[in-house]
Amino acid sequence: MKVVGSELMGSCRLGSDKWVYSSDQSWNNLPKNTVINVLSSKMIPFIIDVKRNSPGIMVDILKALKNSCPIKIKVKPSDENIRKDILTKFNLSRLHRLFNNGYGDVYMGPVRIVSSGIFDISPVISFNTLSFLIPKSVRNPLYEVAFASLGVNIYLVVVPGVLLYATVFTNIAKFVNDKKLTYFGSNVLMLYRYILGVPSKFLNPRTTLMRFYLGGVISMSLSTSSIIQGKLASTMTGISYVDTVRSIQDLVQSELPIRMFNVSRYAFRDINDTSTKQLLERFIPIPPLTELYNISLECVEKMDFISITDRSFLLTHPYVHKTHGYLEFETMKVSYVMPLNHPVSEYFWIRIQRIIQVGVVDKIFGSYRNWYQLKEASRIPSDEKTFVLTVKLLKLPFLLCLFGNTLAVIAFGLELIYFRYIRPIKSFFN
Figure (spheres, rainbow, N blue to C red):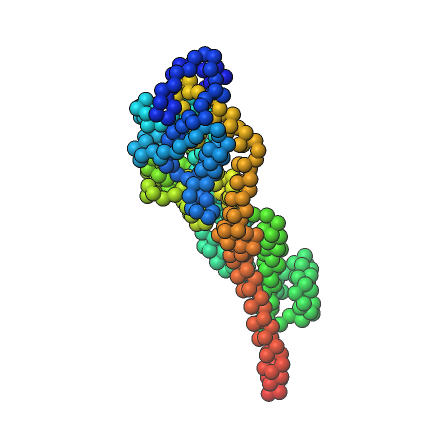
């Protein structure tokens, strides 16, 4: 960045007239009727204005600059070709020709800070750092993580496990009925029957099998319920999201599609490795007139694709850091660009710094953050929604608990019917 000193040399055009400045003349001596033509880029809005749906924070800075500047500033919109050249090719030669042909004195928009030898560039605080907006993965329960690491479907493991459990306790019941247990096995059996509520001297062949099987299911249910309680307690005290992408290599290995503007491909135009080509193959183009703000909101809401966003969205949105991560890949600073030795370049730079120091930007950030909280709270997973999400992920342990309790109730009902009605009838006839 080149900031001109208090003494200026050379010539420049102000408004429609030519002014020649010697070394002893500074920008403080500019005539009050001087007109500065600001060529404003019709770029993607930095922040959406809440009331008017127009570019917010950049326009506010420009308005503050106009209101505090003793020199008259006239804003002239640039054409679509200028915007396309600067955003896609970062070609400032066209801008240089416009300055020379008298179209404008100052350009306000996104540029790369690579042409300090051609222009005087004053970066504004509202810089756009383009980043990949990446949904974080939901932290799965421990049993799902274990099964997933083995590459096995959880249902193909649980169902055979229940059948194996039933087979084991069937054999235990047969050993009990045939009295083939050792002394140690008899003591363990007595302790286990005591836990299950079976009298130590009473062994009914009709109900022993069901009692042992239900005892195993109930034990599984107790263990599962303990895991559930711990999991739900941890869920209620935090958000169950984890980072999965921390580099371009991780991004290439992820399976989510990437929705970006076609012009964003230029950020990878100089990279010819295989991983980058694979990344480009997953790009889903976004219509040119779509606002980056809306795409970022959709990415936060659906969490099923990777998109791009700018620094403003990451600074002002209150929940995005809980559910999403970001990976910076391109920086375009929103700057005021002037020809070399322009008499107002230092004035613009000092004035912009004063606007920032008085807290205008912080105030606008706070206003938009509060507005986001009111508007987007229903879209972003809150603690209550995260609780519901985790309960859905734990549906299998809940089903196991329900299965064990249901079998216990059925067995209790069958025993009650047998001992109260069927057994007295048999003893009466016998």
